[in-house]
Image 1 (cartoon, rainbow, N blue to C red):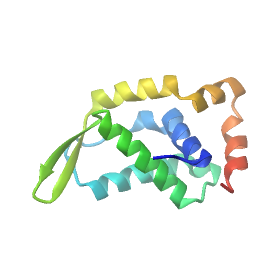
Image 2: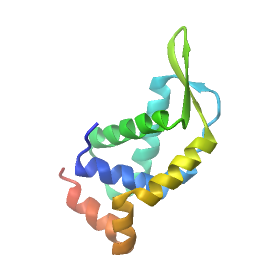
Image 3: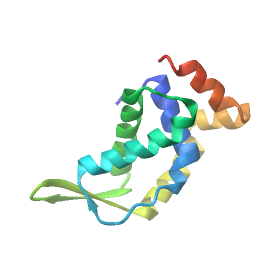
Image 4: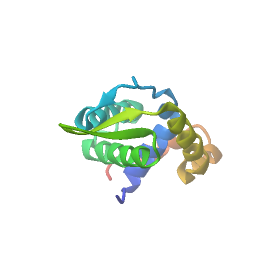
Length: 127
């Protein structure tokens, strides 16, 4: 999935600031509920920047969820009702550590200083 600049920055900010707090009940989650939870977490994280594009937040959340499933942060099981997902905290922590260290936008934000996110989101709002 190709993300826009706004979507990439939304995802990077969530990885930088909000992702460390994610800790889910290890029960099995249906896809619609899981995607709703991830969308809400990301939306809340970037709400301070007045990001009003629901589509951008949803696309960033979808990309994150696809990555987390591919990396084993959610195990998958088939049920009579379709796929179900279970949070795997150790795999999630491993992914998060790698994502924070390798994300170019996070590196740019760290080098640019504390007002990077505010300035960047202000410039991207119309995207």
